[in-house]
Length: 389
Image (tube, rainbow, N blue to C red; front, side, top):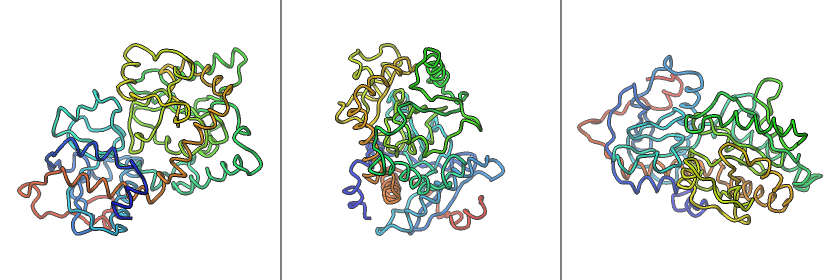
């Protein structure tokens, strides 16, 4: 699709790109092999100019780097329109760079923590997670995104005229995760969830299927979609499995997200306080949530539910949703209808996004010819085999 066709087919997809472009120009500096990967696009070809050595990266980081570069390369070579020449920087770490300019997986949701507006040489453009290419871990069916999506489709078909409906899903809230993955911005997030669920179990309540992740408790990603409620936790930064959970026709419950990914702006949260008829939480966490997510949508618009940061109102929120099944089903349906039915997680949307990203980057990234000259680097096709320059 052309840029125009992409914007018509996927309204709002490129909003996060447009927001960063609106912040104005910046200088692309040569960071060498110690900084983020730097590449060059010239005449529709992708070149790698600066990159860390294979031996300096973990297997996970190599997968991340390779997957994202393959996404970009696919978007370039399948584009029906010319892609502008530019030099770019890609950050494959989970957290955004504290300074500088790059394309990364996430940036803070709180405007006060981003700092972009105060530093003209700090920009974080968002790119799709590398797992939209592949993520070879055992919990993701097949290891590729389309295989995982197909496995989720098969599960969901059983609750949509395939012998059952949404009310046939398990009426519990499910979570599996590694407790030690905690953010300094949300200390105790996962431990608190475990404790809330444990207290509920001790009181004879059965709404929670919450367990630390190990070999005996692990669930395939599509198995989460068998539950009416899916609990989402961020880790040190964003969570790479969030977009898999968003393909479920299940209600995702989470504390207000601290990290924005490339489609997070499409979330339409309703706060648990609104459901329960309470004022929004006070204090630092409440203020941060208000800055990050200033709008609480109505029950007829929402596609996710934000609970308190310490999960203290989770039991009441699940009980409220169980007492209002049509509201719960509506929230669950709108999530899947948008991200799956609307195609925002499709290969077409991914390619559209990458092309918009490079176009947006190229309009504000100033490339000094005295710094970069005519240096091209290594063609991506060769780099993808060698894994280094």
